Image 1 (spheres, rainbow, N blue to C red):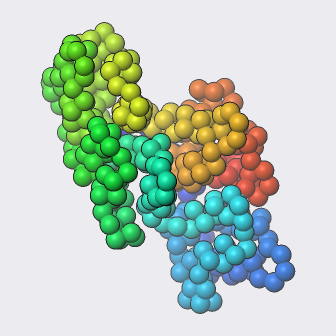
Image 2: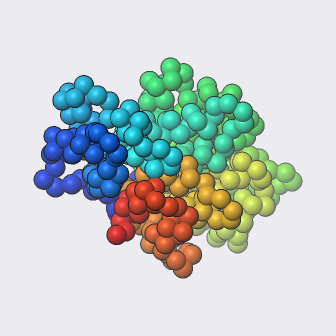
Image 3: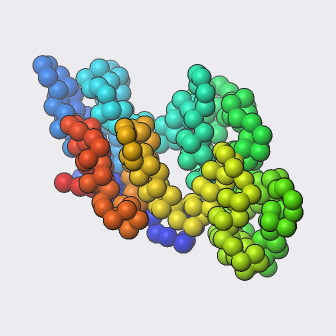
Length: 320
């Protein structure tokens, strides 16, 4: 997204890769009595997504079978969720997660925020295109029917792709910081529209400068200002953007921690972040997790999960 940190994945393309060899090994792992779960883990967690797509293609061409359907029929529970997530193209997987967050009773705003507020314009556009292809309805339209108010306006701005992914202008940063200050702390009530416009339009590197200037202008951090001025989903979304501007790995480390904190585990979030970030910056997220919480991500995941599910996640995190 920008140059302020170097994303380090935990999963990279396997060298000496052969879709045929992997495809045959997976077929053998699922044929006959019993399933060789460890073989499935060893293969699918150690290949890039594009390699997994080639394996799935081989599976169809060689056996006339659908790899995902076969995996679903052999596996179960959260272990199945991880393995199936690995075989779906990443952008389609995020669309499925967005769709699930909006279907049925109630809306899972946390998922909408995590997926949409952490992305660059190009990433959002890919999601928007894939969503319409998969569900035959625009993401913006579906989202508008499930959200409301300023929160809806912010998400709509993000999915319509208004963010300027390139511009960084130090002079303008000061001006925009002053606009935020005037729209919030300097007036009675808050002009959410100004916050929405700046947060959704400016590039992440530009926002970083704006937040630094905001502290110079107001003497408070942007987080303190947002917490004083906003509430509910809009506040959560704005803080997510701020965190992703300052450090995407820290943002995702916190989300992972929240998914495992307290009673019960939010397995859906745990799986989504580990799978989706494994080829992007999961190594950075691991470092941030340990820095913030003084324990390793691997140990936290081991405490919260069990069996093949645990083994699959630990393999993606890069543990033994």
